[in-house]
Length: 418
Ligand SMILES: C[S@@+](CC[C@H](N)C(=O)[O-])C[C@H]1O[C@@H](n2cnc3c(N)ncnc32)[C@H](O)[C@@H]1O
Image (tube, rainbow, N blue to C red; front, side, top):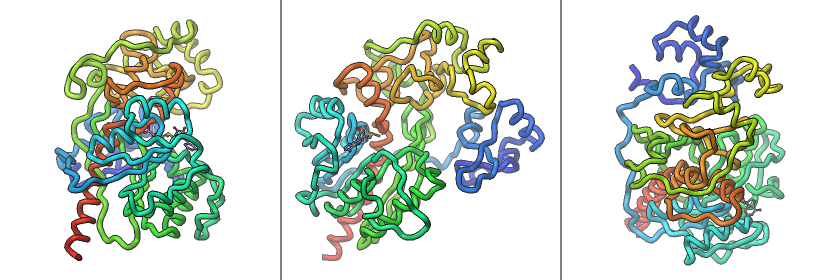
């Protein structure tokens, strides 16, 4: 039965009950007890269950035998990338590992630029605000423009939008670069929250602008990093535009069936050929450490004594809901929860399994599947920020294979035609 089920993000109570072989009454009880909490589906506002919450309780919930064994494909030509909002290079290294060549990268943050230059002196790093760069010199010279533009609202009232309507936003700059460069394909990357941002209007506006500048948008998908050899439950929204004169399909990478855990990130194994190198890392203030000392691996605030729960959670205690990220200690045998830009951030603690401390800088980098050799510039806080902002390298690599497959087909078609 499972193999016939479409894998989706949200399940109604009856779907979840059927798949878990439980009654809807049991699910309602679990909801009240906080064991499996229903959420509002962003588009319809119905109460539904999120796939991740179900999988936290039942890791084999969606084991799918049809999952791919390998997405690898060889690039048949030298494909060139213009990577915008490049940060410390998570996506860029992933694309490079897949076989694409970074022709130029733009980034405003001086420490992230130092990171890129230090590790890849041959890369052409264009440092500064994207608004101040023209990309016309790359016109028809680039195969793919990529970029994780920070998400900002612009007014969209259901009518078609043109590029000018987004002026002043970073999406405008992304789209302007695409228009100037005219690549066969462009890829925007963003947080999952873009789906529901301004009730979906922001995303609809972006799709309408890409349409206006000559790109058809492939149905948007959320990719889960854990499906792509990343030991972390991070999710990214991928926005793919294909130039309208091109009639070639883009296929998202197929998820792998094996899920990697924290142990695979920090210890010698299939992902890394040695234990994580020692490095510096943040610490918790004593008050937080005293609380987290009481939480077992895979536990969170609900594992604390009642009075401490109340004190630690403050106002959030009375808001109800899961908040499973608060006072969270990660277990060796589970993927890490999404890393943030600051490891000791309130409400998103991801404590080391054995020691009561945040992950070190190199542990952070491993969880994002950066190679150990990739050095980060700037203060410790700057380094955490660059890592926390990144697209996991292994996820970038799989997206890279999808781009290469698309470009191989496109250039083969052009050859046949000529
Ligand atoms: C989500 S991060 C990108 C992460 C990157 N793709 C990676 O995989 O490591 C977004 C980046 O956009 C950069 N940024 C923000 N505003 C910018 C601007 N006006 N011009 C250029 N870069 C900008 C930020 O400094 C940040 O590094």
